[in-house]
Image 1 (cartoon, rainbow, N blue to C red):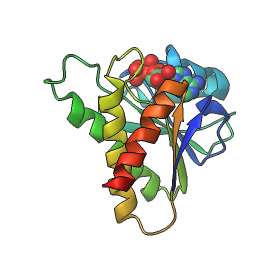
Image 2: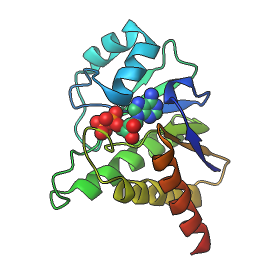
Image 3: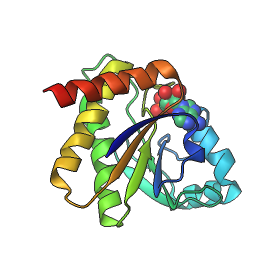
Length: 170
Ligand code: ADP
């Protein structure tokens, strides 16, 4: 099942929320800052112990004060025109998160629009990748698995809805 949700990802009651982190896992602005504030100071400590995460990969932590079970910190690519491997790296973020969720036995996962804030990835292109990767995963995964695309604004939510509609019509 795929759902588009408009609102703050830190409020969601899902097994996993995905954080659009930076390579140092040091917290920052945007969704990363919101997750660190809501999860509490233990999250910064856990991230410091992990030490960092390469672009396109994922590192899990507990969710501490959040209602979810796990936080998957993934590092999206900074958009530099699209010819420096950005699409492959963004695909890799989604793939790594989804396969880790499966390995950890998680049943639901919420994604923010990775790289679509300060990392400047064109939203339409990023949404296409997000929806394709998730759909591919659902096609392979037989048990029920809930995916939430959590958007902070209506324009972004509309892009996801359009992309999901296009997929259904294909
Ligand atoms: P990146 O550095 O990967 O670009 P950002 O945090 O700057 O990450 O932005 C990623 C997306 O997350 C943007 O679309 C932004 O509007 C959205 N966002 C920011 N705060 C939240 C939040 N609390 N919940 C869900 N989405 C959020």
